[in-house]
Length: 130
Image (cartoon, rainbow, N blue to C red; front, side, top):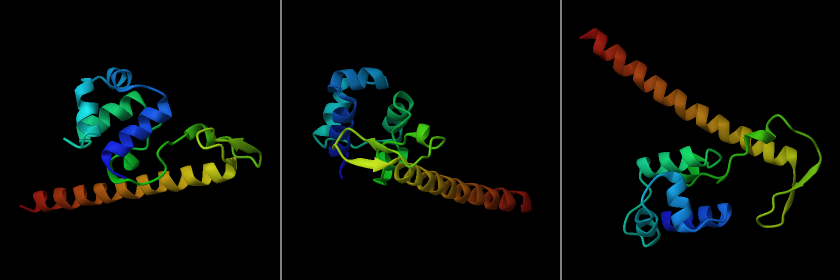
């Protein structure tokens, strides 16, 4: 999915127009227009502003196209076998399915953070040996 499609998905999901979305994120609506026209992509700066305004958006989906688009961490503490309607596409899934997906996503996040920590430790070790 390209960045233009991601912006379209976010606008649709949050039921906002470009101007409302941009204002909530704290940037000029032209940025959204430029991303939608493929003039520019979603930079780390833009993604950070989107995630700050909408913390439920998965940063890895936004930057690296890793599903799911939305992380609903309220479901983590509410695992049950009851069904829930996700609303957007009308599909009904079990809370456990949603929760397992969220847990897998957090595991990926933790693994990536651990890789970054390991790299930092290596750099620090090399610097202290000099």
